Image 1 (cartoon, rainbow, N blue to C red):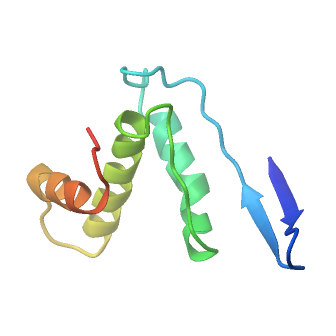
Image 2: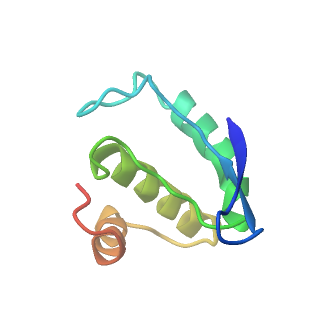
Length: 99
């Protein structure tokens, strides 16, 4: 879904690209990694266009998983080793209350 909304107080417009994934149940894991990889592949180009908002029902479980994977993929792309402790530390420093 894509929508453009003109502001009430200004002529500024914002384009919103919305992705909704319903096959990842709350407090669970996806059946396989393919949909996660596909979602990340589709959404990654959006990061250069402006702010990206990632949110699940509570904003901590699935959101945290997506953000952790995104951070880990970026770090691995620039080379070097990466530990889950480093990923967890980064997320707890930047995103409040992630699981």
